[in-house]
Amino acid sequence: MNARAYWVDAPSQASIREVELPQPGPDDVVVRTLYSGVSRGTESLVYRGNVPESQHEAMRCPHQQGAFSFPIKYGYITVGVVEQGAGLEGKHVFCLHPHQTRFVVPRNMVTPLPAGLDSGLAVLAANLETAVNGVWDANPQAGEKISVIGAGVVGGLIAWRLQRVTGASVELVDIDPNRAQLAASLGVDFKVADQASKMRDLIVHASGSVAGLNQALDLAALDGRIIELSWFGDTPVPLPLGEAFHSRRLTIQCSQVGHIPPRLRHEWDYSKRMDLVLDLLLEHPELSCFIDGESAFDDLPQTMSKLVASGGVLCHRVRY
Image (cartoon, rainbow, N blue to C red; front, side, top):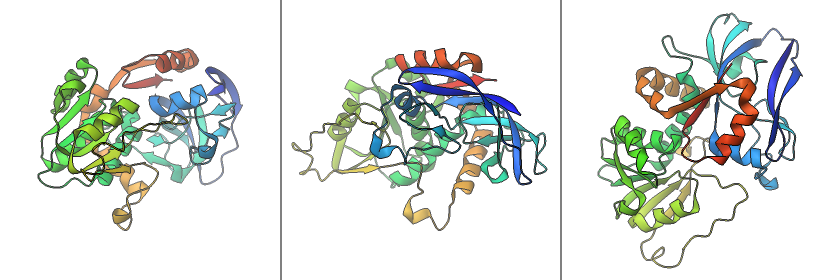
């Protein structure tokens, strides 16, 4: 069996290649892809060649081929239908797999979608998983004043989830005033960056910019906590850790979806977390507001170039 896959051949150069699929074993499934999603932040770093050598192993995704020194087959948001294997024929599933028309993976690497969940909406699963884990890491407390900086997909999903979990009024902050429409769709407050509220107890930073992280320090109240979800690759990040950082006793904590917070590891595993994510997508079809573009798989090399160069992109869906 053959398939076609998206490869990054060199920095800012990509192509569609023919790949040979392995013969499926008794515990494997053959999946035909319906949609994949572009994780714009991480995939932009991979596309430009900005993954530092020290992180090559940590940044490997399931079923990746090649290396970050190029060429590389990368991606981790795929929804498809099982064509063969494990009694799942005809089931729609989510899988952490690069952009590819068809693939063979072990049965335990796919998660069946709950009945009624639109396959096109399920491309948000990976970003919502990051958001769920980010809220766990943030561990919001009753009565806290909360802000989220960066109204992209992850930031918007975190603001939505924080408000639902805490019942508090969450402020979503972005430099783009047009993000007010997204915030309204989610039912959260919105402020452009230069009008953001100060003296915040909990600030989640997801803008992917150094300026956004600096603003998080500026907005924090005494004993304020900053949860950092952005990943800057090999870009140096200067921070004003003089000034009021010490006198206000601020804390900066990283959140990364690859690990469940220690206090929850006895209760949750990756499978249960993904089941929660897919159930949330089923219950909240309004989250489709995060999908703001779609293109054909065959156009992905050109599409990725445009996505990396442009700003203001939410979730881009790839159609097969």
